[in-house]
Image 1: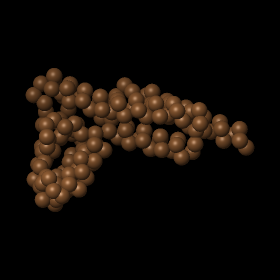
Image 2: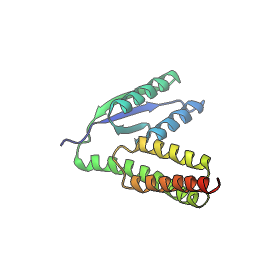
Image 3: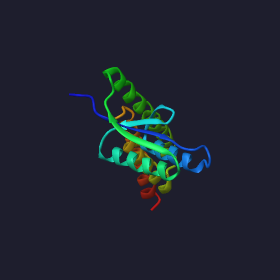
Length: 157
């Protein structure tokens, strides 16, 4: 099986005002993009990531910058593996942080906390392009916090 294609966004924004730069950075972070070098980011290419980068490119241009999107394949398996590892490392760290937070909620669960944990789990899963190994532990721990909330609500009735 061939390595998957990647979508690249190359962009440059003026330093001032900083608001567009911050907005683009936040959106790239939300997507889980890998920064290759300053102003060049990558994601595995699928319909959603290509569309997201196309929209971001338009946003950059509208803010007075320059942007281009490309589809590419890494030149070697090692390069593909390095990109994949970068994405998995970032997502894995998010899953680990969520797992720790969910563990803390098991002892004293609240409806608001459990709903927030579930939302955060869904957000991270949206950035998990390669199935990080930490995903299952995070899901199970969030489920345990939800079960603890259900048990607390039943016992309080």
